[in-house]
Length: 429
Ligand code: CTP
Image (tube, rainbow, N blue to C red):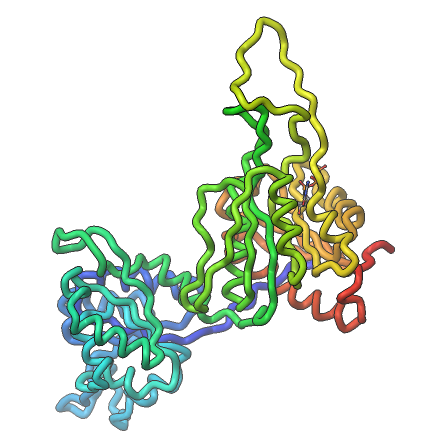
């Protein structure tokens, strides 16, 4: 079984830290970015060094921290490099894929908005030829102040990308807008920013979550699907630049959103398999890719009661009717989108998944063990297509979703070059 290698392009960012209590979050952000395979060069303002030390950031990033624009009296810069040509601000920003300023204080935002370059970090930002991402952090009244809002509007007009701020309790004890986003959220958004826009101009339609088949006013048939995998696939599709329509059964998750790519998924919430089929029928006409991630209930009650069924003395029998197969319906359309299914099995995973791919007549199925996948945050997938089996090693669901979509892009491309696209794809031997 072929193991799919995860490509981890070595992205380089400059992480700028300015003076604010949220500077402590920059330590965790550095750790997470490095874990993702990003090369992090930290640059700190003098004020930032009052909140967190360059020694901490050097230890976490593995590189000396840039703090000083000027060569010192011994002719050495702050990295002890005597060959410095005084152009660190130019060299550092040329060799980077993005500058991320987190936290960005109200003062630093004002300096950015006015193009000031009076210390190393502001000079790096002004001299850059790469995107600038800014995560504001300040007291709520500083954030709401007309001057800050004016500066923020100027940054947006200048093409600077803003992440946050969030609302919540603040270090000063007040409550409101101005908290820096959490490190995990920032790391996720920065990683999304670096994804190649492989699905630009593509409409991806997905189903996710369980369905709920009512029996009476309070009871029903459902399953333990959390929707996490389907929502992760929707999120990853947004990151790759797709237009995404997500048809979801009942879950506790919020609509996928990708601020750095600038769009969210269209979320259509449904309850039963019949509702899900109807929503798919309404959305499928212009879909390029359909991915059935939902754990659709296979049966529904033949009769439902609008009132709660009272407990009787004798046993209760339920008549069940089969639900429509939504993926099967889409795959059998005269001009189907590129269809991908999921196979959740408790045993004989590969055998059942191969059979499902053939029965549903789809080019690709992602197989996983239900007992490992349902409700979990990470998983392992085996992708099965005409070429055989490809293992996506255990990882969090968003990482798996990104890998799955890259496989879909490559497979769709190779099949379209064989002239099989825009027609039912024959997968039977
Ligand atoms: N699926 C669907 N509509 C259904 C049942 C399943 O669209 N009524 C889709 C799922 O979203 C998934 C694939 O079909 O992409 C396989 O689902 P799964 O539950 O693993 O298999 P079933 O087809 O339901 O077969 P079985 O329950 O016998 O394993």
